[in-house]
Image (cartoon, rainbow, N blue to C red; front, side):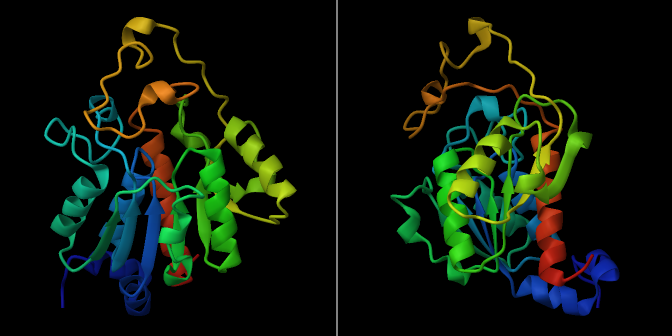
Length: 252
């Protein structure tokens, strides 16, 4: 019988679709990367999904985030994403966590409940905390390295963290994970050298912050505000979704 996943089933088969329907995936970070990851997971038939983010949609998100429109500015990202998920597939079991993942909030999440974890956040300490907990529970995890200040989406690769190069975030992660005894980690990263954002204060959040009222973490708190564009983080997010889907189905 035809349904919304019939075209996907032609590629993957019935058993794989059942595996996806019964899978529970957690996506940490619903931004330029994570939003597209969630979109693709849901459109591919994942039956249960946890979305984790404490941020609100900002006007400056519209250039790259799938949930960001003029109508959603000021709303919590997880609320907007949940509504979008259920519009795509009302049968999905969605759990929205309005939360910034860190060592302090980690106990709110039982990683053993997940079949796969996606790390789409950009805070090094939180990424490390998440990776260590996932590996402790033997839950597959894929981590996104830097997607900001890049212009070439064809430079993304899927590899082990210790095989990465060029990416400044990956360099830090290699060192920190090695110090903690982590032997391997699947990542998506770009070999493109990072570009330096223009130092133009007239278009910088540093001096012209427009974060929505009530935003927990403002852009001005960041050490550097990266430049971004629609066709780079989205590609990283779709690559991640592809890896998750193929791993859950055992398809290569």
